[in-house]
Image (tube, rainbow, N blue to C red):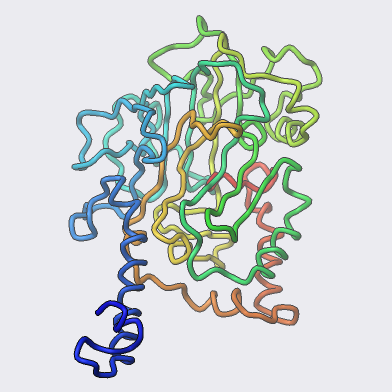
Length: 376
Protein backbone atom coordinates (compact mmCIF):
# COMPACT_ATOMS: atom_id res chain seq x y z
CA UNK A 1 0.00 0.00 0.00
CA UNK A 2 2.80 2.42 0.87
CA UNK A 3 4.52 1.71 -2.44
CA UNK A 4 1.23 2.30 -4.26
CA UNK A 5 0.89 5.71 -2.62
CA UNK A 6 4.38 6.67 -3.80
CA UNK A 7 3.38 5.49 -7.30
CA UNK A 8 0.23 7.60 -7.19
CA UNK A 9 -2.23 4.72 -6.68
CA UNK A 10 -4.63 4.10 -3.83
CA UNK A 11 -5.07 0.70 -2.23
CA UNK A 12 -8.01 0.02 -4.59
CA UNK A 13 -6.00 0.97 -7.68
CA UNK A 14 -7.43 4.47 -8.19
CA UNK A 15 -5.23 7.36 -9.25
CA UNK A 16 -4.17 9.34 -6.17
CA UNK A 17 -1.66 11.74 -7.72
CA UNK A 18 -3.30 14.93 -6.49
CA UNK A 19 -4.16 13.40 -3.13
CA UNK A 20 -0.63 12.14 -2.49
CA UNK A 21 0.82 15.46 -3.63
CA UNK A 22 -1.34 17.36 -1.16
CA UNK A 23 -0.51 14.86 1.57
CA UNK A 24 3.20 15.20 0.86
CA UNK A 25 2.98 18.97 1.11
CA UNK A 26 1.11 18.73 4.38
CA UNK A 27 3.64 16.22 5.70
CA UNK A 28 6.55 18.52 4.81
CA UNK A 29 4.86 21.53 6.41
CA UNK A 30 4.07 19.56 9.56
CA UNK A 31 7.60 18.17 9.67
CA UNK A 32 9.05 21.68 9.32
CA UNK A 33 6.68 22.98 11.96
CA UNK A 34 7.75 20.24 14.39
CA UNK A 35 11.44 20.93 13.75
CA UNK A 36 10.80 24.66 14.11
CA UNK A 37 9.24 24.18 17.55
CA UNK A 38 11.60 21.50 18.86
CA UNK A 39 14.21 23.75 20.46
CA UNK A 40 11.63 25.88 22.26
CA UNK A 41 10.03 22.71 23.61
CA UNK A 42 13.41 21.37 24.76
CA UNK A 43 14.01 24.69 26.50
CA UNK A 44 10.77 24.45 28.46
CA UNK A 45 9.33 27.64 27.00
CA UNK A 46 5.65 28.34 27.64
CA UNK A 47 3.32 28.15 24.66
CA UNK A 48 2.07 31.34 23.06
CA UNK A 49 -1.22 30.88 24.91
CA UNK A 50 0.58 30.65 28.26
CA UNK A 51 3.14 33.38 27.62
CA UNK A 52 3.16 36.07 30.35
CA UNK A 53 0.95 39.01 29.46
CA UNK A 54 3.29 41.76 30.63
CA UNK A 55 6.30 41.06 28.40
CA UNK A 56 7.21 39.78 24.94
CA UNK A 57 10.86 39.04 25.76
CA UNK A 58 12.50 36.84 28.39
CA UNK A 59 16.05 35.62 29.00
CA UNK A 60 16.72 32.03 30.05
CA UNK A 61 19.70 29.75 30.69
CA UNK A 62 20.67 28.15 27.39
CA UNK A 63 19.54 24.62 26.68
CA UNK A 64 22.79 24.30 24.74
CA UNK A 65 24.74 24.58 28.00
CA UNK A 66 22.77 22.63 30.60
CA UNK A 67 25.94 21.86 32.55
CA UNK A 68 25.99 25.48 33.75
CA UNK A 69 23.83 26.07 36.83
CA UNK A 70 22.34 29.48 37.67
CA UNK A 71 21.18 30.59 41.11
CA UNK A 72 17.95 32.21 39.94
CA UNK A 73 15.95 34.36 42.37
CA UNK A 74 13.22 32.55 44.30
CA UNK A 75 10.83 35.46 43.93
CA UNK A 76 10.85 35.18 40.15
CA UNK A 77 7.52 36.53 38.90
CA UNK A 78 7.39 34.10 35.98
CA UNK A 79 6.40 30.44 36.11
CA UNK A 80 9.53 29.16 34.36
CA UNK A 81 13.28 29.67 34.67
CA UNK A 82 14.19 33.16 33.53
CA UNK A 83 16.85 35.67 34.48
CA UNK A 84 16.10 39.10 35.96
CA UNK A 85 16.66 41.93 33.48
CA UNK A 86 16.88 44.71 36.06
CA UNK A 87 20.56 44.55 37.00
CA UNK A 88 20.23 42.07 39.86
CA UNK A 89 23.14 39.68 40.35
CA UNK A 90 22.77 36.03 39.31
CA UNK A 91 25.48 33.65 40.44
CA UNK A 92 26.40 30.70 38.25
CA UNK A 93 28.87 27.87 38.07
CA UNK A 94 29.96 25.38 35.44
CA UNK A 95 32.83 23.05 34.61
CA UNK A 96 34.93 25.86 33.13
CA UNK A 97 33.95 29.10 34.85
CA UNK A 98 32.35 30.38 38.05
CA UNK A 99 31.06 33.88 38.58
CA UNK A 100 28.31 36.48 38.64
CA UNK A 101 26.10 37.74 35.83
CA UNK A 102 24.16 41.00 35.56
CA UNK A 103 21.71 41.57 32.69
CA UNK A 104 19.64 44.57 31.63
CA UNK A 105 17.10 45.10 28.86
CA UNK A 106 15.37 48.27 27.72
CA UNK A 107 11.57 48.41 27.35
CA UNK A 108 10.70 45.42 29.54
CA UNK A 109 8.69 45.41 32.80
CA UNK A 110 10.75 46.97 35.59
CA UNK A 111 10.46 44.59 38.52
CA UNK A 112 11.83 45.84 41.87
CA UNK A 113 15.61 45.58 42.14
CA UNK A 114 16.96 43.42 44.94
CA UNK A 115 20.66 44.24 44.86
CA UNK A 116 21.24 46.52 41.86
CA UNK A 117 22.86 49.89 42.39
CA UNK A 118 20.82 51.41 39.58
CA UNK A 119 17.36 50.90 38.15
CA UNK A 120 16.99 50.22 34.45
CA UNK A 121 15.46 53.67 34.00
CA UNK A 122 18.60 55.24 35.48
CA UNK A 123 20.97 52.99 33.55
CA UNK A 124 19.41 53.52 30.10
CA UNK A 125 18.58 57.22 30.50
CA UNK A 126 20.25 59.30 27.77
CA UNK A 127 21.85 56.24 26.16
CA UNK A 128 21.36 54.40 22.88
CA UNK A 129 21.87 51.03 24.57
CA UNK A 130 19.16 48.42 24.09
CA UNK A 131 20.57 45.74 26.38
CA UNK A 132 23.68 45.05 28.43
CA UNK A 133 25.32 42.28 30.41
CA UNK A 134 28.31 41.93 32.69
CA UNK A 135 30.09 38.75 33.77
CA UNK A 136 32.63 38.74 36.60
CA UNK A 137 34.38 35.60 37.77
CA UNK A 138 37.22 33.10 37.48
CA UNK A 139 38.22 30.56 34.86
CA UNK A 140 38.71 27.04 36.18
CA UNK A 141 41.49 26.25 33.74
CA UNK A 142 44.16 28.29 32.00
CA UNK A 143 43.22 29.18 28.44
CA UNK A 144 44.67 31.45 25.76
CA UNK A 145 42.85 34.67 24.82
CA UNK A 146 42.19 33.67 21.22
CA UNK A 147 40.44 30.43 22.27
CA UNK A 148 37.67 32.14 24.26
CA UNK A 149 35.10 33.40 21.77
CA UNK A 150 31.64 34.92 21.75
CA UNK A 151 29.06 35.39 19.02
CA UNK A 152 25.90 33.77 17.70
CA UNK A 153 25.14 30.27 16.49
CA UNK A 154 21.96 28.58 15.33
CA UNK A 155 21.08 24.90 15.20
CA UNK A 156 19.00 25.28 12.03
CA UNK A 157 19.52 27.20 8.77
CA UNK A 158 17.91 30.60 8.44
CA UNK A 159 14.49 30.96 6.85
CA UNK A 160 13.55 33.60 4.28
CA UNK A 161 17.24 34.33 3.80
CA UNK A 162 18.23 37.60 2.12
CA UNK A 163 20.26 37.51 -1.06
CA UNK A 164 23.77 36.18 -0.44
CA UNK A 165 24.96 39.01 -2.68
CA UNK A 166 23.36 41.55 -0.36
CA UNK A 167 24.88 39.96 2.74
CA UNK A 168 28.35 39.71 1.19
CA UNK A 169 28.20 43.31 0.04
CA UNK A 170 27.14 44.36 3.51
CA UNK A 171 30.07 42.49 5.06
CA UNK A 172 32.42 44.03 2.50
CA UNK A 173 31.17 47.47 3.52
CA UNK A 174 31.87 46.63 7.17
CA UNK A 175 35.16 44.84 6.53
CA UNK A 176 37.34 47.74 7.62
CA UNK A 177 35.42 47.87 10.92
CA UNK A 178 35.70 44.14 11.70
CA UNK A 179 38.64 42.50 13.49
CA UNK A 180 40.74 40.05 11.49
CA UNK A 181 39.61 37.38 13.97
CA UNK A 182 35.93 37.75 13.01
CA UNK A 183 34.56 34.50 11.51
CA UNK A 184 31.19 34.29 9.79
CA UNK A 185 29.15 31.67 7.91
CA UNK A 186 25.51 32.71 7.58
CA UNK A 187 24.40 30.36 4.79
CA UNK A 188 25.37 26.95 6.17
CA UNK A 189 23.08 24.46 7.91
CA UNK A 190 24.09 25.87 11.29
CA UNK A 191 24.77 29.59 10.76
CA UNK A 192 27.24 31.28 13.07
CA UNK A 193 29.56 34.18 13.60
CA UNK A 194 32.14 34.58 16.33
CA UNK A 195 35.17 36.53 17.49
CA UNK A 196 37.41 36.54 20.57
CA UNK A 197 35.67 37.66 23.74
CA UNK A 198 38.44 40.08 24.69
CA UNK A 199 38.15 41.83 21.30
CA UNK A 200 34.41 42.37 21.61
CA UNK A 201 33.58 43.53 25.13
CA UNK A 202 33.21 47.26 25.63
CA UNK A 203 34.91 47.16 29.04
CA UNK A 204 37.32 44.67 30.58
CA UNK A 205 39.22 44.44 33.82
CA UNK A 206 41.43 42.03 35.77
CA UNK A 207 41.48 41.92 39.58
CA UNK A 208 42.95 39.92 42.41
CA UNK A 209 40.29 37.85 44.23
CA UNK A 210 41.03 39.45 47.61
CA UNK A 211 40.07 42.87 46.19
CA UNK A 212 36.66 41.77 44.88
CA UNK A 213 33.45 42.02 46.90
CA UNK A 214 31.68 38.67 46.54
CA UNK A 215 28.27 40.29 47.03
CA UNK A 216 28.59 42.93 44.33
CA UNK A 217 30.03 43.56 40.88
CA UNK A 218 33.46 45.08 41.48
CA UNK A 219 34.77 48.04 39.48
CA UNK A 220 31.55 49.87 38.52
CA UNK A 221 31.51 53.67 38.23
CA UNK A 222 28.60 55.95 39.11
CA UNK A 223 27.12 55.62 35.60
CA UNK A 224 26.94 51.84 35.80
CA UNK A 225 29.95 51.25 33.53
CA UNK A 226 32.81 48.88 34.29
CA UNK A 227 36.08 50.75 34.82
CA UNK A 228 38.71 49.38 32.42
CA UNK A 229 41.84 48.00 34.13
CA UNK A 230 44.36 45.76 32.34
CA UNK A 231 47.34 46.45 34.61
CA UNK A 232 47.49 42.84 35.87
CA UNK A 233 48.23 41.67 32.33
CA UNK A 234 51.69 43.10 33.15
CA UNK A 235 52.38 44.32 29.64
CA UNK A 236 52.70 48.07 28.93
CA UNK A 237 51.87 47.42 25.27
CA UNK A 238 48.24 46.65 26.16
CA UNK A 239 46.20 49.87 25.88
CA UNK A 240 44.28 51.03 28.94
CA UNK A 241 41.16 52.26 27.11
CA UNK A 242 38.38 49.99 25.85
CA UNK A 243 38.41 51.11 22.21
CA UNK A 244 42.19 50.84 21.90
CA UNK A 245 42.23 47.50 23.74
CA UNK A 246 39.65 46.01 21.34
CA UNK A 247 41.69 47.18 18.38
CA UNK A 248 44.88 45.74 19.90
CA UNK A 249 43.29 42.34 20.50
CA UNK A 250 41.68 42.22 17.06
CA UNK A 251 45.02 40.84 15.84
CA UNK A 252 45.92 37.19 16.32
CA UNK A 253 49.56 37.97 17.03
CA UNK A 254 48.52 39.88 20.16
CA UNK A 255 45.83 37.45 21.29
CA UNK A 256 48.20 34.49 21.22
CA UNK A 257 50.55 36.11 23.76
CA UNK A 258 48.08 36.13 26.66
CA UNK A 259 46.20 33.62 28.81
CA UNK A 260 43.23 33.83 31.14
CA UNK A 261 44.72 32.66 34.43
CA UNK A 262 42.86 30.78 37.16
CA UNK A 263 44.16 33.00 39.99
CA UNK A 264 42.61 36.23 38.67
CA UNK A 265 39.06 37.59 38.53
CA UNK A 266 38.00 38.79 35.07
CA UNK A 267 35.17 41.16 34.22
CA UNK A 268 33.58 41.43 30.77
CA UNK A 269 31.05 44.17 30.06
CA UNK A 270 28.92 44.24 26.89
CA UNK A 271 26.16 46.41 25.54
CA UNK A 272 24.41 46.70 22.18
CA UNK A 273 23.00 49.86 20.62
CA UNK A 274 21.25 48.56 17.53
CA UNK A 275 19.43 45.34 18.39
CA UNK A 276 16.25 45.75 20.45
CA UNK A 277 15.36 42.48 22.24
CA UNK A 278 11.97 43.88 23.24
CA UNK A 279 11.02 44.26 19.56
CA UNK A 280 13.58 41.84 18.09
CA UNK A 281 14.48 44.40 15.49
CA UNK A 282 17.82 45.67 14.25
CA UNK A 283 17.26 49.41 14.62
CA UNK A 284 20.01 51.08 12.60
CA UNK A 285 18.45 54.55 12.52
CA UNK A 286 15.17 56.05 13.80
CA UNK A 287 13.79 55.54 10.29
CA UNK A 288 15.35 52.22 9.29
CA UNK A 289 14.92 48.90 11.10
CA UNK A 290 14.80 45.21 10.22
CA UNK A 291 12.50 42.65 11.87
CA UNK A 292 14.76 39.64 12.54
CA UNK A 293 12.24 37.10 13.83
CA UNK A 294 11.18 35.65 10.44
CA UNK A 295 14.79 34.65 9.73
CA UNK A 296 15.77 32.76 12.89
CA UNK A 297 13.79 29.56 12.27
CA UNK A 298 12.66 29.12 15.87
CA UNK A 299 16.10 29.70 17.41
CA UNK A 300 16.86 32.40 19.98
CA UNK A 301 19.82 34.73 20.02
CA UNK A 302 22.36 34.45 22.78
CA UNK A 303 21.99 37.23 25.32
CA UNK A 304 25.40 36.46 26.80
CA UNK A 305 27.79 33.74 25.73
CA UNK A 306 31.42 32.66 25.87
CA UNK A 307 32.83 29.31 24.81
CA UNK A 308 36.02 27.40 24.11
CA UNK A 309 36.64 27.62 20.38
CA UNK A 310 38.49 24.29 20.29
CA UNK A 311 36.11 22.09 22.28
CA UNK A 312 32.81 23.96 21.96
CA UNK A 313 32.37 23.92 25.75
CA UNK A 314 30.56 26.94 27.15
CA UNK A 315 31.81 29.15 29.95
CA UNK A 316 28.35 30.74 30.20
CA UNK A 317 25.34 31.03 27.90
CA UNK A 318 21.94 32.72 28.20
CA UNK A 319 19.33 33.24 25.49
CA UNK A 320 16.83 35.92 24.49
CA UNK A 321 13.40 34.56 23.64
CA UNK A 322 10.64 36.62 22.06
CA UNK A 323 7.02 35.49 21.98
CA UNK A 324 6.93 35.80 18.18
CA UNK A 325 9.85 33.37 17.84
CA UNK A 326 7.33 30.62 18.60
CA UNK A 327 5.13 31.52 15.63
CA UNK A 328 5.90 29.29 12.66
CA UNK A 329 3.95 31.46 10.20
CA UNK A 330 5.85 34.72 10.80
CA UNK A 331 6.89 36.22 7.46
CA UNK A 332 9.30 39.06 6.64
CA UNK A 333 7.98 42.48 5.69
CA UNK A 334 8.39 44.58 2.57
CA UNK A 335 12.09 45.18 3.14
CA UNK A 336 12.73 41.51 2.38
CA UNK A 337 11.58 41.96 -1.24
CA UNK A 338 14.60 43.95 -2.29
CA UNK A 339 17.00 42.31 0.16
CA UNK A 340 16.29 38.98 -1.52
CA UNK A 341 16.29 40.27 -5.09
CA UNK A 342 18.56 38.62 -7.64
CA UNK A 343 19.67 41.90 -9.18
CA UNK A 344 20.88 44.34 -6.58
CA UNK A 345 23.45 46.43 -8.38
CA UNK A 346 21.13 49.28 -9.33
CA UNK A 347 18.61 49.02 -6.53
CA UNK A 348 18.29 52.42 -4.82
CA UNK A 349 16.83 50.83 -1.68
CA UNK A 350 19.78 48.47 -1.45
CA UNK A 351 22.26 51.32 -1.78
CA UNK A 352 20.37 53.16 0.96
CA UNK A 353 20.53 50.07 3.17
CA UNK A 354 24.26 49.61 2.69
CA UNK A 355 24.84 53.29 3.34
CA UNK A 356 22.88 53.01 6.58
CA UNK A 357 24.91 49.97 7.65
CA UNK A 358 28.17 51.71 6.81
CA UNK A 359 27.30 54.71 8.95
CA UNK A 360 25.79 52.97 11.98
CA UNK A 361 28.89 53.58 14.06
CA UNK A 362 27.85 57.23 14.19
CA UNK A 363 25.12 56.13 16.60
CA UNK A 364 27.59 54.37 18.88
CA UNK A 365 28.03 56.00 22.26
CA UNK A 366 31.79 55.87 22.05
CA UNK A 367 32.20 55.81 18.24
CA UNK A 368 33.90 52.44 18.57
CA UNK A 369 34.00 49.55 16.16
CA UNK A 370 30.75 48.01 14.99
CA UNK A 371 29.21 45.96 17.78
CA UNK A 372 28.33 42.41 16.75
CA UNK A 373 27.58 41.28 20.26
CA UNK A 374 23.88 41.32 19.53
CA UNK A 375 24.94 38.13 19.57
CA UNK A 376 26.72 40.14 20.82
